[in-house]
Length: 399
Image (cartoon, rainbow, N blue to C red; front, side, top):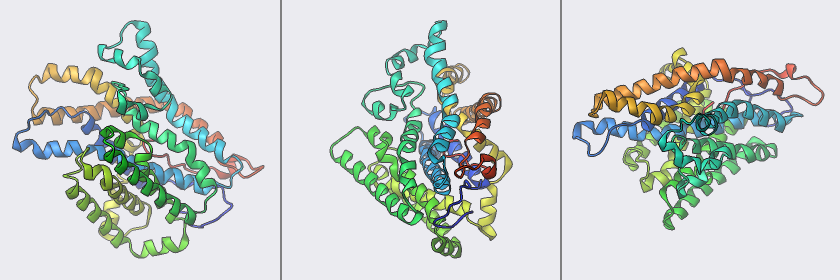
């Protein structure tokens, strides 16, 4: 891990295996939440299962924090490179857009041409412009329904973050960036409170980019702090305290938000910020050397099957809602006309497996062809070849 506050090196951040596991945990939270088949009213014995599935949205928050951490780390480590901006934007395009636009192309170009548009997708066609332009997070709260692709709002948030954040990092050393991250987190909280006071739709607090900026900013702050030598030294001396703080923050936030209730007022105000801070601390623990029981816990995140899920998590995220809405629900109601907890759990597991298989095929047969081109977009010194700075680039967020 590079820790110098200012350097002329153009090496990108080293890959941290445990963060693949963090990415896997995020997608394994999100999919059961998005394919939850349990319906109210709930018998008392279903409450634990319902609470667990309803809380799965926090996986998106974890994705945001992780994205802020990885993106900012790479930007800080390459900000003196000759092709800083072109390399960054080129790599992001190659990672995100091929699968994203193929999904939209199948739904809105190929399917209509074949006359096989699902009935529920017809209404989405009139709002598809928001999907193609990565603006769905601003349209959905006000009736811009995008059935089957509602989850793309989070990708829109990240794309909008990518548009301005490289320019912020370019002008900041890590210490200064910490203050900017703190200010961004504070602005996000204030904006959410103002939206609540003005009775804005709840979805605005959930989807607007500025409202989720504290997650991205606190992840970015974690990346900045480990590149300040004095701060890194203090962190390494207090790892057990960091772990205790993360655990306590998660417990307090869960208690104060009724188990991470998605649209609870406390969740959408301080809950988002506290949850983001807890996740940022957990990511720091994954990035720092640890010992004893904590090291064993972090080692679990490096378990190869879990890392493999993390590797395919982007495809799993893109694929699972349309798979669920256009095929899964039809099959579920055919084979299980009566929704039971066991059937709902089995269905969620089946959707995870199916999404994993399809995402693996997409990655190995399609996406990898574009990912190989990323090596031509590595950060370089002025006049230097990219081969001189090749490193294992830790992909961000869902990727």
